[in-house]
Length: 162
Image 1 (cartoon, rainbow, N blue to C red):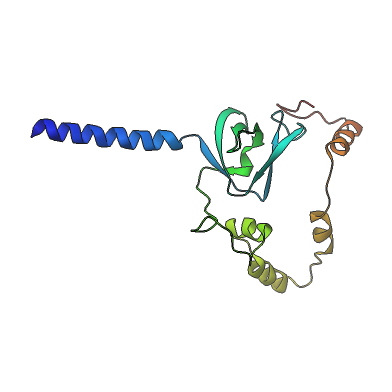
Image 2 (cartoon, rainbow, N blue to C red; image 1 turned 90 degrees about the horizontal axis):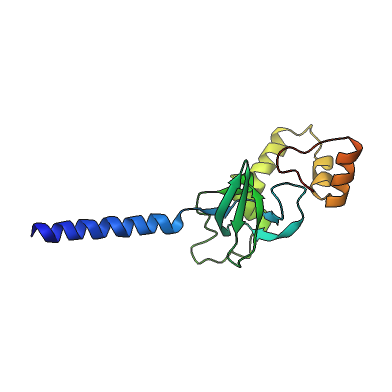
């Protein structure tokens, strides 16, 4: 009887340890459009995208940058602010409802949605959001960013290789 209990407890502990181990190092993408880079820097060449809610495995960490592997075996560096250790679930069926776009889902995941924005705009009606809306649509290429940094003689911090 005692041996049976010992085996049962040992088996349970091993099962629990395996479950915890199998999920260790897994992170969820918490931004709408994550980009894996060739080096731990915002200036690193883009290797490929990762989607909101996608699970990636952490391989290595250098400062605030993580070298990760995506489900489709793509590896690259991503800033830790784009990831969370929490499991991001889009819906119980695994599919996203067509009534919300990916931007709305990303904002809702962070507690910000159209209703919150509408209320904020209403409470702050004297503020013009035209330039904010304009800036959200502006894209800066890697070459433009490097030219800007060179013109200002800005030296990127650790991991800032080009």
